[in-house]
Length: 265
Image (tube, rainbow, N blue to C red; front, side, top):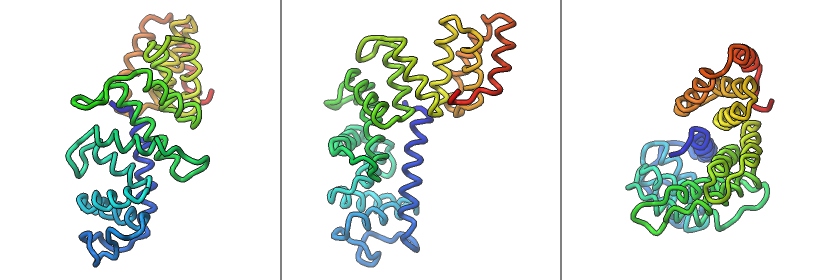
């Protein structure tokens, strides 16, 4: 359901959190007084203990620590706990529980420049994805208008490439509001300049369809060299279809341009 660019955001936040937790020496022990951390410890100490336990494969202890830290208002712990529920990682998968926690994070808002900004933005993206698809057996139904609004918030206020890409696709397809090719191109171009290979491919495809054959094909070809393996298949299909109907001159020009195309060009 998630693209590689979105997954990489979560991986980055996880790595950042692990770095913060690395200050705890030794191995994670059972969640008791011998570990030097109890349920009454401060939220950041619980957070660090949770990630250390998680890193050592002791996920039950990690979940317990996250829960106590989350109850004390620690955003990073809430985010980590939500991810575990969303992925079924150390707990039984429960998308609705994850949704509720992401909603708590999003409802808090975030101060400009806050260290919690990444967690807040990731919560927005997660909620948008849930609203796009709904959660079977829960009160969360498909709400494309809400999904589009959440992507817009992350795209405009925080300049997140994945949000810009997802918003562009919704606008292009008329999901959650009116279709508008020019607005979609604006967001695709922004995402492309922010390093999103998928946006580059879709942007190039639109240009190709509009008659800018060589330029569009160049972007689609360049995107193939920058895509994540999980996402290369659909980009390759777009490029091969365009390549098959382009004339020989446009193919030559596109191949030459693709070698020097950068995301921000």
